[in-house]
Length: 121
Image 1 (cartoon, helix red, strand yellow):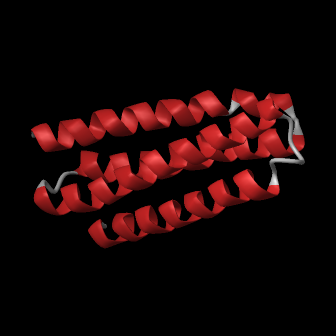
Image 2 (image 1 turned 90 degrees about the horizontal axis):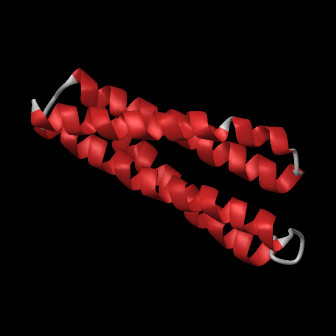
């Protein structure tokens, strides 16, 4: 799992950079400042959690524990739900997608808690 999460982190970081460039150059004239800001928040949190996945890959070798593996899955789920919902909301304008975002945020929070727990044990 260490290699899986490390690769997932690198690919997530790669796509965050690409999406950030797309937002800055391709969407600047197409979205309102509010929607562009929402898109950028999605990119920012995707990058934070791409780095978290790299940490999970490293931590799973250093302190093998089910909680560390669970943290990696939660970071992936959080990225999909949190950042994904913000991308879709900003591009579509469908405000109901904002209801999904906090679920992704909760996955991020639980992932950080489990990563800390796995390192503590």
